[in-house]
Length: 158
Image (cartoon, rainbow, N blue to C red; front, side):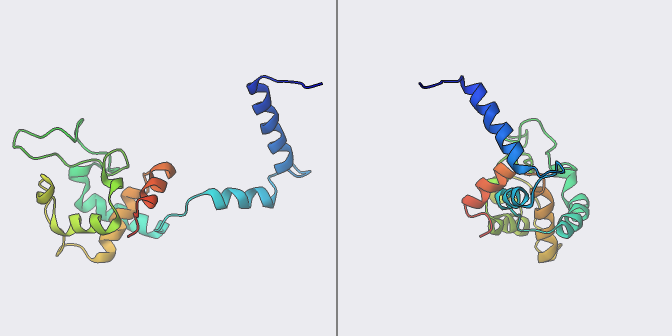
């Protein structure tokens, strides 16, 4: 005799089973379950120290155009402005910055945005290499794990 349960009951049963297996007698998550979560989490290329440094650098050099939290300052970053240039895009993962590897992001920081229809000035002689990477770390810290994972798959750290 076969018993068929609706899908929602099967999912509930699986979740209950996972919770029972993952917890020990004290009700805390076992070491094995914690290790599984750590393996599944995508480690980032940068450290928290770089993010902290990058926040200051971004605030001083980038936020006026890209927003304090890299969220952008215009409603539609794809719409050209009256002067024919594109506005600064958000860098928080909601625009196209995540499509580009770090090497290209550094290139844009160094050379500015004119080649891409923007007005961003070059920062080649303004910021040290480590400061540029810290600024990138700061705005990438706003990227979801999904966006970060897609960026990695596209060769983001190249």
